[in-house]
Image (cartoon, rainbow, N blue to C red):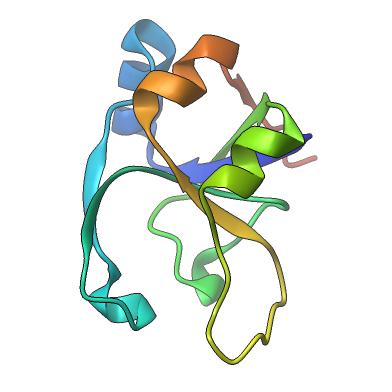
Length: 103
């Protein structure tokens, strides 16, 4: 499955050179009291109106089972896109990602 990660130019350069690195995420913003380490991915490219912080979209092809293993589903079940918080160590096995052309 193709998954997408939105970021900025500085981060893209580092990711393409060294792979993804874990970012801490407080799941408090998602209704859980847990701190996790990983990288956010979605099943479609997101934009700033959907909370992304950047304008460059990276795409990487991974097994559906990996995405599902770390998938976050809101408690209310309202889903407009699927999202997953995958540890960098696992996602980097399938890289490198490619920059999605906006044209």
